[in-house]
Each structure stands twice: as C-alpha cells, then as structure tokens.
Amino acid sequence: MKKWMLWIPKLNLGFNDAENYKRPENKDLFNKIFVENEYLNKIHSDSTYFILGEKGTGKTAYAVYYANNQYQNTIGILNYIRETDYQKFITLKKEKHLELSDFTSIWKVIIYLLISEKISNTENRISLFSSNKFASLQKAIDEYYAAAFSPEILQALNFVEKSKIAAEIIAKHVKLAGEKGFETNFTHSKFQTNLFFIQKHFEDALKSIKLTKNYLLFIDGIDIRPRNIEFEDYLECIKGLANAVWSINNDFFSTINSKFKLRVAILMRPDIYSNLGLQNQNNKLRDNGVLLNWITTFRDYRDSPLFSLVDNLLSAQQPYYNQPGECWDYYFPYKVQNSKTGKYDDNSFISFLRFSFYKPRDFVSMLSILKENFVRKSVNPQKVFRKEDFDSDEFRTQYSDYLLSEIKDQLLFYYSEDEYQLFIDFFQSLNGKVDFTYDEYIDAYNEYIDEINKKGYKTPKLMENYDKFLQFLFDNNIIAYFEDTSDESFMRWCFRERTYSNVSPKVKTNSRYTIHYGLHKALNIGKKIKTSESRTSKITAHNKRYKKLPD
Image 1 (spheres, rainbow, N blue to C red):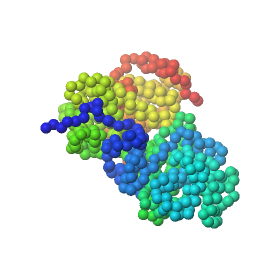
Image 2 (tube, helix red, strand yellow):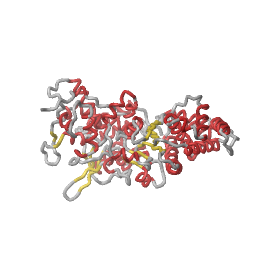
Image 3 (spheres, rainbow, N blue to C red):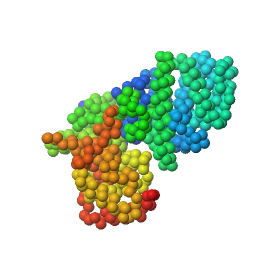
Image 4 (cartoon, rainbow, N blue to C red):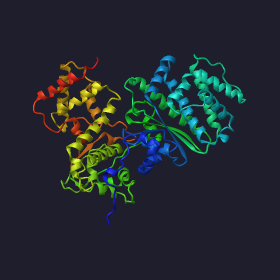
C-alpha cells in the first residue's frame, strides 16, 4: 500500500538563515532535519580552527547545531560580530593608536572572556572556585559588570576599552586571593600593558581549572561588512581575529594539560580567508580548516551528502519512516531531459543541480519558492510537484532573483551599490548571448566601457580591465569556462574547482564561456537584442537612476 505523505502546504522547509534555529521554538525542527556527516566530524577535530564555505554552504548551521546540542560532550558557543563591534574597534584604533598586534591582543581577551563566562555558567561552581585563580578572576568580572555580563562581543569590548579599570579590579581580587608578583601601576596611557596583564591572568585562570566538558567557541558574522565601515578597517579587524585564533589554539589551548579541550573557530568565506595574508595560508587551511563543498556529479548524486540533506528535509517530518530517497521521488516524480542523450530519463534532482551552486541554501530556496507558488495557486490535483512548476517563468524568475541577490550581497562586501548596478547593465552588451567566446567578451567589455565613459561615469574598480572583470565573473560563479578534450567539453565552475590547495581558482582566458542557468532571468539574457539603441537606452535609464561614481 502506498504510504501517506504530508500534503505540500504542511511541509515545513525551515529557514534560509540558520541563525533562526537558535530560537528555542525552532530547535526541535532543526535537530530533526540536521544531518550529521563528515563535515561535523572534521569540525569536531581538535585541530580545526577555520571553517570555510561560500555563502549558503552551511557554516552557521554547524555552529548552531553545536550551540543547541552537547555534541560528543562539547559545549558550543556561538557569537556574532555586529556592526557596532566594528565601530568600537575603529574607535579604539583612533583613540589608542593601535597596530595589528594590538588588535590580536584585544581579540585574545575577548575570546578568553566569552569562554570563561560559558565555563562559569556550565561547570560545577564548587569545583571551579576551588581554583583561586579562576575564582578571583570571576569575582573581578562580576564586579566590573555588576554581575550582569551579557556574553556578546560588544560587552567584552567594553572590558577591553576600560582596560585600566578592568586591570585594577582584577589586581584587587588577585591580591585578596593571596597571589603575589603582579603589576599595580595601571594608567590609561599604558593600554597595551594593561591588556597584557588581563590576558595573562585569564590564561593562568583557564590553566588552573578542571573541566568536565569540551568548549568550542564559534565566531560568525565575518562575511558581512557594514556599509559604513571602510574595507581596510574591516580587514585589519579580521586579520587581528584570525591571528588571535591561530595563536590561542596553537600556542595556549594546546598546552593545557587536560582531558577536556578548549578551542575557538571562525567562520568565513574563502575569498575573505584569501585576503588575510596568514603565513603558510594553504597549509593552515589543509591542516587546521574545513572547506564546506557539496560538490557531486549527475551520476553519483544519489549517494551525495547534498541529496541526503535535501531528502532528509522532506522525510524527517513525515508520519512514517521512509527509505533514503523515497520522499524526494514522491514529491518530484517526474523525469527531466538528459543533456547528452536528449532522452527524458534523468531524475528531477538533476534539474535542481543544474540551476544551483550546489549549496544547501539554494535547494531550500527552490523548495520554498515552489511550495509558496503551489499554495497560492492550489489547483494541482496530484498533490505533488510537476515539471511544469519548475519550468514556469514565475518560478525561474523568483529563483533567479534569489541567486542574484546572493551575488549582490557578496559584491557589496567589496564594492558600492552604484558599481553593482553598472555591473548588472554590462550583460546587455552581450546582445543576449548565454554562451560567448573570449573575443566576443572583449568586444562587449570595450563597448560597454566606452558607453559608460561617454556618459561621464568612471570605470568601476571591478571592471578596471577585461581580464580582472572576467575573473570577477568567474569568482562569483556567474560564468564558467569550457575546457575541451579530444572528445568532450567540460564546464569549469569556480565552486567546483575550489580545493584546500586552490582556494581561489583562476579563470581560463582565450576560452569559451557560459552564464549560469539560474541567472538567465535575472540578467535578462537568452534573447538577442535587436539594436544597439536598446542598450544605449538602458544606460541612459541607468544615468537617471544612479549618481556618478566618485573619482
């Protein structure tokens, strides 16, 4: 007898942003749909300090899972860097005339404070306070914050900013505990000295306690740079954080002689990691990082972690147990065309792969859009999704807009809103082409640059020359290049080529290129534009909407 499955409107497809799963009312759903896999095991390794992945690959989801559950006796702590935190760092830099090493020291104190607070609230206080060093430090923290410390980075930054007061309070409680040989001459002008004193007492305190659990602090929010924070200021702050994480894990936490471990890990995109300038950067990623990559093939997709994750999203909430793949095949029972044979014998999942960047968020977005459209129309008698639903202009447009919004967020990390709009208008110069040669690309580039310059616009930084712009298009998975063999052509996408040893793959010049399927609607390509006047009119319309780029 055929199993009864939830009606499509009853499906809960969760959230695009995993931060929502920290809310108490969403934890049960998240635990149901979360799939423990090899990445979770890699993150659990004592040597993992950097968790890398493009936007939407699940970095935050893994951190939230740790924060919601004591996975293998490990307490997860998740903190986000917010806009006000960056602003505070910039203020400190100006007031204290800070260098990169000072940023590293500040981050060390922040990390120690956040972990110490979690330990204090989790471990047996009688056991903890048998250590005079940890007890005196905790009393100092309680006095400074009037016993109302909120475990957030901004609160911890306040402790750093008032380093003279914080150091004096710590010194008082250390003295009351009977310790000797500590600095007592604290002044506002000796910021670095005060900071080192605070750091040393945190390290002494953490070394002195006996833990009953592991503690893993995740720092997230790095992928978002507030619009009002200059890129160089942002980068200096993040470089200090990365150096602090490396130093704390490698030089301090690893030296603590304890059965249970302390660790801190940061979550970031590969392009940001490439900008950090860490020594032996590739080796650090290979030895001390996890690169989230959900790549699979059309042939082997059924055994992939990506298919398992998507199928489990559907099956975890069903009233009956289902075999792997059973729910996907129920809700998407149709076949799609095989691009090589022309026959309609490929599983529906293949079409989802073609239109995605092979990221969990892409699939959640596609499913959510399909469900919303289904509910709104409510005319499908089959109670399952049809090929027509996926092929509809409505779905393709909605999903294409989603993909472009993801790219926009990443682009605005480095560039301005005006530069983004000029980048979008470039595609009209391709005259509707989805596939194009290197020479056709250069002609389109030169034509477009001439047009915007005639209108009084400065060439955007991302379009300073045609090879730089081509690399930008490849980096953001807007285009792939073709690599030809004697009997076959392969599409090379940046997200597929990225590896531990090649975090920033390079595009091939003098090749053929194609624009990603999922972006055709949003970029308004695929149909030939009749006259050059239509492109000129778009540029003119752009001039009316956006101010000129500053020199």
